[in-house]
Image (cartoon, rainbow, N blue to C red; front, side, top):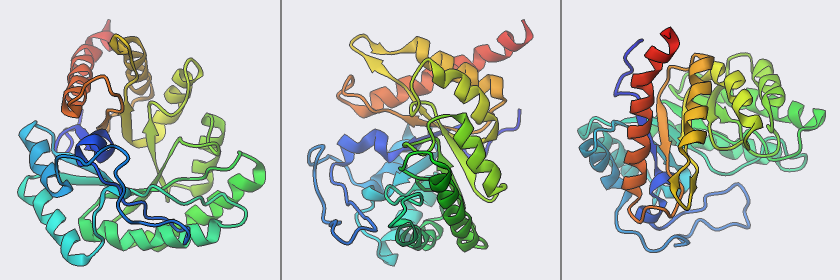
Amino acid sequence: MQVLQNGRFAVSTWSLHRLLGAVYAYSPDPGKSAAPKEPYGPGAAALIDVPAALAARGINRLEVCSFHLPSLDAAYLSELRGAMASSNVLFQTLLVEDGDPSHPETAERDVKWMAEWIDIAAALGAQRMRVIAGKQKPTEANLARAAHHLNWLADKAEGSGVRVVVENWFDLLPSPVEMNWLLDRLDGKVGLNGDLGNWAAPAKYQGLADIMRRAEICHAKADYGTAGLDAEDYRKCLEMCEKAGYAGPFTLIYDSPFFPDEWDGILLQKQFIEDFLREAPAVRTA
């Protein structure tokens, strides 16, 4: 298997939302404010310090949620890019967390707003920019509208060094049928970030086995119960990735109060996937 630059693991800042604290709700909706709010508490670390913290734990890829950027000024973006470079952390994806290209009334406004993030992603040195494909019900009209606007967005990103990707997320993409339809209409201009936690079991397993063959990156979210990580579900999701031939990076998505220290949950998931990958070749040849 090809060895990936900077390893096979990334972390999304969503996995550290309690540690980081404040969020800045950038939005195409003029009625929404980007003033900082603290829905998860005041936090104990700054985003600028995350690359070094990642590298110290043997992880050298990062995804940043747009709402975790405390500033969009060029000076700050340059400083954050420098912090990543000095820690040898690759900026895998900027996650743009608002907008709806499928909306019958605001899609054009929203996708133009999304396009403004291309320059921000490029300034940060991000390889990819994940956008929301759509939040509306998967009618023929809504899917076609999303495809039209996402094609336009991909054209805007051409030459920037930033690849636009979407995710199997929200009402527009409830199953592989809609996901594959959309990717087929985008004709390779937009990539797929496959998320292990956005669809519900048991149907999600075969769904993942289908779409992960097309995925470039993966949000490896684990479920937790009162006893901790749901190992059966996580292993089944990873088996579906293996079945699909997925060989890309895994972004560790920890979203649970089970561990007070979010790093504990992140590193547990990393160890789980490492153990699975060590066992997988033996399973394939058995």
